[in-house]
Image: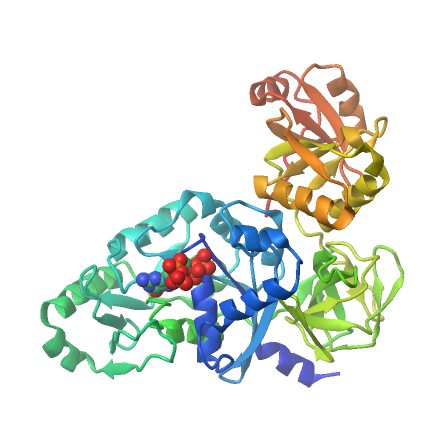
Amino acid sequence: MSAPVVDEANRRRTFAIISHPDAGKTTLTEKFLLYAGVLGEAGAVKARSGRRSATSDWMEMEQKRGISISSTALSFEYRGHQLNLLDTPGHRDFSEDTYRVLSAVDAVVMVLDSAKGIEPQTLKLFEVCRSRNLPVITFLNKYDRPGREPLELLDEIEEQIGLRPTPATWPVGISGEFRGVVDRRTGEFTRFTRTTRGTAIAPEEIVAAASAAAEEGSAWEHAQDECGLLDAVEADVDLPSFLAGESTPVFVGSALTNFGVRHVLDAIVELAPAPQPRLDVAGLPRPLDGDCSAFVFKVQANMDRSHRDRIAFVRICSGRFERGMVLICHRTGKPFATKYASTVFGAERTTVDEAYPGDVVGLVNATDLNIGDSLYEHVPVEFPPIPRFSPEVFASARPLDTGKSKQFRKGLAQLDEEGVVQVLRDPDMGDNAAVLAAVGQLQFDVFADRLDVEFNAPIEVLAAPYESIRLTDDQSAQRLREIGGIRVLTRGDGRLVALFESRYRLQRIENDEPDLVLDHIIAG
Ligand code: G4P
């Protein structure tokens, strides 16, 4: 084995698009597919998802809220490369699901609405990319309508996320009168042509700098002045710092009218990294052309309610995956036959016969696989666990139908394993006393909805009065249990956690009793 595996890996770009809701993630996704020739006409993604919701009651909430809760992966060819786009749930609330998707990608496209810039609710998501040193390509969207000063947006990116923006293209024309972009690398001008909602690929008129100067007059001069400022601070696209997650190439455009979409796709191919050998727990790289290996970054049960199945989404890390091969799960030591391997687009599945590093495969009937599990064919490997995020909201679940306690317990266990919420238990008390912990409130809503719909165990979610959580150990737990306003519980992975009703009390304890183990749950 073999060069073909490395060649296939080099051809791949595995990435996610992240944005604040309404900044244009769905539109940009559609336009990527349009430019890649996958969709004859943009808009089909929405139409397709509409059909899906109509024929399947999977995630009724998705329909009710108009948001996409489940992550899916899309693969398409562009310029001889295979682009794997992992969808991240698009909602206002943080969810651990989104963060887990980020552990399976090699780069991220960050879409900002140029009229709004970075919005507080999504800042955390962008910070996670920064803290993990994920390479980020920035797309300043909606330039077809009035927006904020681009230099101001660059400052915001630098100050709030700590990423150094390096514009690849720069807008020509004042806000509301967008003329096009100048490519800072070549000096060429691409003129903006307003297409009707951009259902077809935008005609691109590329104009040499000299002609653009004559034709665009003061708008061109102004853009040149700003580019001069950018040159002076050496804000040029810089591959090493981009790959290190320190700088971000910035593109401007308008997804709706298709303007600038090609620039971003080209950047994914030219700048974003191909899959690299993944490091195992010991920090040793798993060679790309070695034995097949993968890790589970998402588990979704009951996607197809007529089948009641459980799919584990894995990212292939090394080797060639072949449908039907038997993989071993490192945690359980058990073999897993991959007879049913598929890619999932919404609820529609397509069988996958082979896959290479960077690809995402959905393994059907994955009853024994959990998030973070490492799989291998022959040569054992354990990849580092997917980081758990420190919960910020807490709740308890009150079953509404006491006759359904068996279903309730089953649902609790299943949804905990899937990571829908974290279930924290007191070993001396029943499941009814469990505390639910999550990064965002929406996780509780999804949890309650799924308990009701899939397990027939309706519950009421009640807010629990905790403000902070820390990891602790047995010895410290004994002391913590003596103090009021604290509960010590066990997490799904067996670790002890302490919940504090008051942040201030936690601070006092940390000051007064420094020997107690009270570790932050590290994100990223
Ligand atoms: P999201 O996935 O990030 O939530 O955003 P989405 O693509 O759904 O876009 C949100 C809204 O912004 C949509 O309008 C979309 O048409 C609009 N939009 C996206 N890109 C651009 C752009 O470049 N320029 C302008 N002017 N608008 C853009 P909507 O009214 O909510 O939906 P629709 O009726 O247009 O489908």
